[in-house]
Image (cartoon, rainbow, N blue to C red; front, side, top):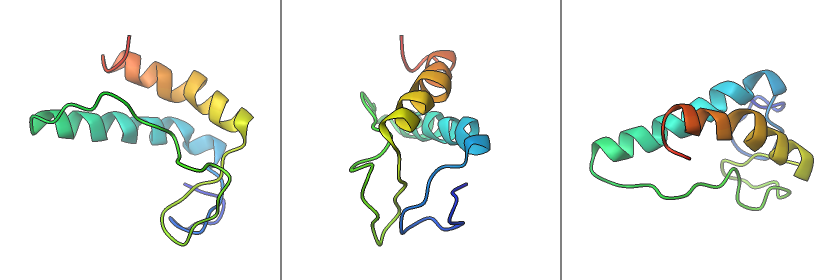
Length: 83
């Protein structure tokens, strides 16, 4: 789903994968809720400009804005996790 083809060491989320990545967020929240654990907040990426040796993704401010506005926000509203 990233330009590097790897989960870690940075790379950017491919534009064509933004919708499915948003659905992963919703699934994560849904699965935790099924176990009785409430999620009240998420972040798209901690330190969005840092390439890490663990799972990480690089976002510019604009990419993060667009992902939240066009994909994550609408998905969470549709799944009834956000108002």
